[in-house]
Length: 236
Ligand SMILES: C[S@@+](CC[C@H](N)C(=O)[O-])C[C@H]1O[C@@H](n2cnc3c(N)ncnc32)[C@H](O)[C@@H]1O
Image (tube, rainbow, N blue to C red; front, top):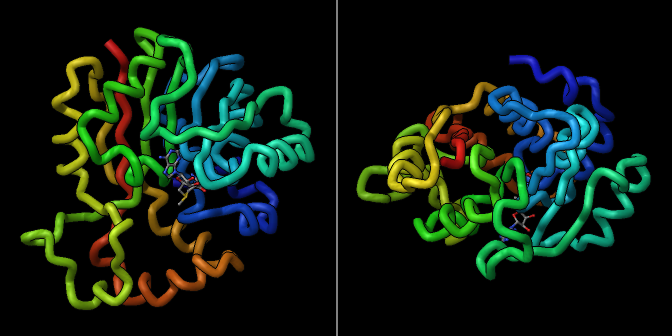
C-alpha cells in the first residue's frame, strides 16, 4: 500500500525525527481507516518527535494535542513552529500512566503509534483513556508486535541477544483479546498493517543510534516474527 503523503515528505527530516518504524507512514495507513474531518480535535498519545501529529495537522487539517513523556514539549513546539503548524498542534508533556489532564469527552479521536505498548498492556488503560473521547469518537492504535505469540512466552534464540524488559511485543490475537473485553468500545478494525516492512526499512536508514542498533535485530528476525498491529474502535 502506498502512503503518498509520507512518500513525498522531506526524507531527511523524517530520518532525523523518527523514533522507531516510520510513524508518519504508519499514521497515514491508520488514518485510512478513520473518518477524519478538518478541525477535529485529536490526541496523539506518545507522539515522540511528532511526525504522526504533523501528518494529522497537515494532511487532515486536524487540531492535534501532541502528548509525550520522553520528548519535551518545547522541542516539539520549535519543530511544529518551524513547519508553520504551531496553530494546529499543541505540544504537551503527559504520562499516560498518571491520568491525563483533559475533560471527559474532549476528543473526537485518540491515536497512538508505536507507544501504546509501553503503557497500554494493562486492561485498566483503555477505559481510562476512553473517558476523554466523546461518544461516537474513535480510538486508534498501532504497535509493533508479533505474527504469533512466542510459545510459552519464550523469546526465540535468534532474538534473545536483542530482547529487553521494555519489548512488549504481542500478536494481533493477544491485543484483540485485551480490547474485546472493553464494553465501552466497539472494535472496527484489528489487523496486521501493510506498511510493516517499509516502515521498518525507513527506520533502519535513520542516523539515530537506536536505529543502527536495531539493524542486527532485524537481520536476525529475517521477516519471521514481527508485524505491526492495528486496532481501531468507536466509543459507544
Ligand atoms: C518508540 S517511541 C515512538 C514515538 C513516536 N510515536 C514515533 O513513533 O516516532 C515511544 C514513545 O512512547 C512514549 N511513552 C512511553 N511511555 C509513555 C507514557 N507512559 N505516557 C506517554 N507517552 C509515553 C515515549 O515518550 C516515546 O516518545
